[in-house]
Each structure stands twice: as structure tokens, then as C-alpha cells.
Length: 81
Image (cartoon, rainbow, N blue to C red):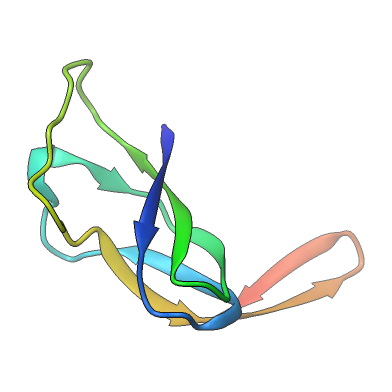
């Protein structure tokens, strides 16, 4: 798993990036990632199921982004999207 810098719309302090319903080029899998999306550039978590290098075309779509709010309750963290 690696962090990849991506660009997307600014959604405020917290947002959730979710994988697309269709496969991403190179069979890359995107993990649900809570990001600080107050700027248009942030990092998401991706994983490649193979050990081979994956070369992507310019401007691939990795996932969708939604505004999110975090609420803490005791020692657990709940994320409401």
C-alpha cells in the first residue's frame, strides 16, 4: 500500500475518498481514505495486487470524494459521510 498525491475538488477540512465501481487502470485498488480536502491536492491510499510496476496514463480517475464530518465518542472514532 502506498500514498499517492492526487487532485480533486476542495471539500473542506474532511472528506472521504471511495473507490470507483469500475476497475482502475493497472488493476490498482483504492482504499477508503479519510483526507483533509481543504486544498485541491491530497494523498489517498492505493494498493497493487501484483509486484509489477504500474504505469498510469495522465489524469486517471481513482475514486469519488464526498464531504465528511468526524465525531468522536469515547475511545472510538466514527466517520459519518
